[in-house]
Length: 307
Image 1 (cartoon, rainbow, N blue to C red):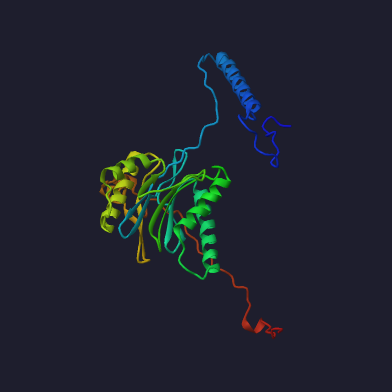
Image 2 (image 1 turned 135 degrees about the horizontal axis):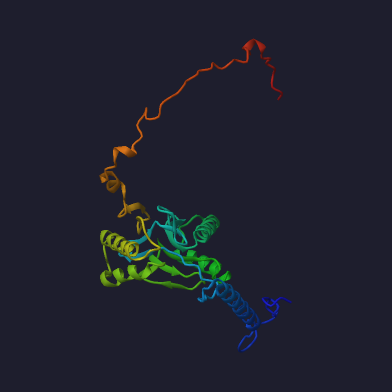
């Protein structure tokens, strides 16, 4: 049996008390670490460099700022638009607000593929549920239950941190859903690497019974706080307003604080860098007429199509 294999069969019950199943695995990882350090030290000593560094698996860092707030007539969701691959910005204008149902939307933080496919799967299940129950309005708690059951089943390996918002017959609802499946129902919430900066804005200025305009501006300020104070968040501000009357307003790129077009237009480039037509001399030019194949309509045989 492998050192990394659990000794408990899936059909057996969970052991009572403390579990020491990972003792051998941890010892093997520690032995590999010591072996790597000794090899590195020997290599550095031969090269004259005495410094040593331990090599351990690093946790994956994700970057996003997503928020949600409940106001008196609905819910407002917000997200930034930066997608990162380690320290590289992979997409400057991606969409992080996902459709779940006509009255329910969800913001996703974490691994892009996990958030996309998780919300797509639950959106499909919600559609099937509406078809099987007479086509009525979906309830927000149903979407929350389906999401948290799926995430708990995978024990956090599906890296999707979600902010779920919507309005149903019981009024506006806002849930935060962690990758391990734990949930919370709150009047306002933030998630992602820029959540602390956004939460500071909410805690300072949130109040009950806000109007839609006040709630949208508060969400925009919270996302901007994440954009300017978190390296994993950036680019533009997206918002989604879900109202109690059933209408939805998607604010794609509501605010573009990092628009570089005017800045680039203000920079005057030297004429030396501009390659105008005629800069490179044409030494010769030859035109060769294409030869036809000599086929006319008289050479085409037309036959009836078999039916």
